[in-house]
Length: 482
Image 1 (cartoon, one colour):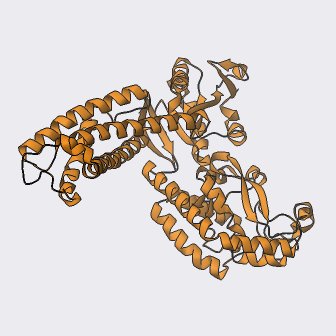
Image 2 (cartoon, rainbow, N blue to C red):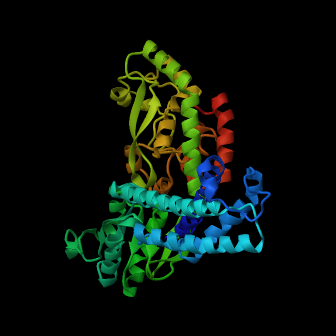
Image 3 (tube, one colour):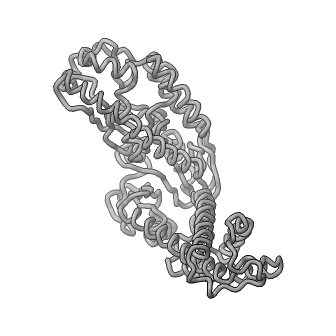
């Protein structure tokens, strides 16, 4: 469950450390060259170099030597091990030790290779700057992570199946190590007499048969089975249900025959787990996806701000009512958020829904019609060109949506979903998707759901890029828009 994430975080931390070490190098060089107060303390072996300007080009090979050297020393001193349980002081001590051994290695290499232009002032400035910069970096990262999780962000809601001693130990680990970012949503037990009672601080929400209802009513990111071996046959059906719904599943028992999800072995502080997951993205890929969402949405919002102002003015001029249409939608694993669109209907559209339901042109629990009288003349153009969707860039920037992903449905639509259709909520909703570039309203509801699951099962950064590339001509041509 955590092994891939830890590997990704370790690599990301190493890259951040490299950048910080390089910054310390340039800071030391700048102080050495531009602050003459350091010159009187400066002694170099060669008289030809004393007092002469040392260009940055001459120092660049030293930078290429120091960055990997310092990272290697940090690695040897355990800076890239699991730091979830470490305090800031422990990390600071690791950096001090790594800086000490890095300084010894740096001095030795300078002597061995007779690098005469490296002065003692630069040497001291770099070692101090590297240590201070790295300590500041770790402090910022640790404080930021603690604050984020203390405010309830970046957490995963875990439903524990089991109330025995092993489940108790698992829950104790979760509560003791809040920096892991897990929150216990509740417990499941197969004894009806235990439903509604509290065990080791958590409420038993129901039995195994109640799990479909609980997963619909509660926001659950992961179900963890910590059960005795005698339960293996009992939970086979329950694990299959989680697979169909697209809920990540961890089992502290044995392997099961699954059709969609893939199993991977991992551990949580020594507790062996088998994870069954229907989305196969690696942590670094999800990081790149979120970074791209953040950067592209910000640039787009700034670039399109004149268009936003024009559309807002036209909406106000052509029909009474607000500029934006706000609606509750469902995204990752049942999370509800407010979706933004430019208003394309008259302000009493919701009250008139019943009188136009007979005009619905698609099957399933959704409503779409080219003859919907509630749409304003301007709104028809905005929908045709998908301009009404542009405010969703705000949702992308806030993290509620992604640029590419299954279209987030209404809560009322989700209530009518069949179990296999709920799995489309196992990935964050997006502005565009395979359905968007495959004809949109021209395809059936069931085909729409299948396309979303096809996207989830075959997701990659390259697939997102291809969908974005296909979205542009689909929008310009108004393919399937209603």
